[in-house]
Length: 110
Length: 114
Image 1 (cartoon, rainbow over the protein chains, first blue to last red):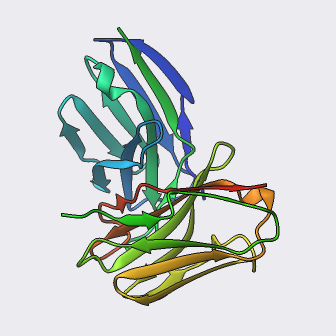
Image 2: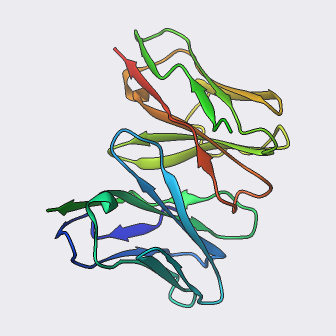
């Protein structure tokens, strides 16, 4: 079942922060985050396994609350290069294929 | 190292024609995925192969779609006959081991069915 992402779109000024949420109606084994720039393929950002861990990647980090079946992606001090569409992919059991959300479009302006 | 290779990059065809999309995964990767991306539905998994065997094809929309993986270095996605609603970007991705590992996406094939 497709996870739900919010917001659908967000516009930021360079240096501002943003949070993108991903929620599922099913219990999750892991959550994956990808970023896709316009006209390009999705690129992997990070994986979070159940256990409530938080990960970081440059100024982009994420958390995973398995009890709430939710994950959040945090973008701090946004840069122009952060613009793109962010997808979460959820894995309901180990080894199962991912279900991707519809994406959150992020635009960072000067 | 070469990434995932897809061909053609763009395909324009007329309704009713057969379309074949091709994918070469990264060498050493044993899981391969075909996705379809549209504005309305986002990124949808069509089929997932592991060690050349189809594991999950529940996302294949209908019998007009078929996928094969005859060996570890090649896969095809065929649509016959094609319809305008099949217009989308089709991505192939590969990974080592399970579907839950980092997936490497190809550049995609933009299909337009007139």
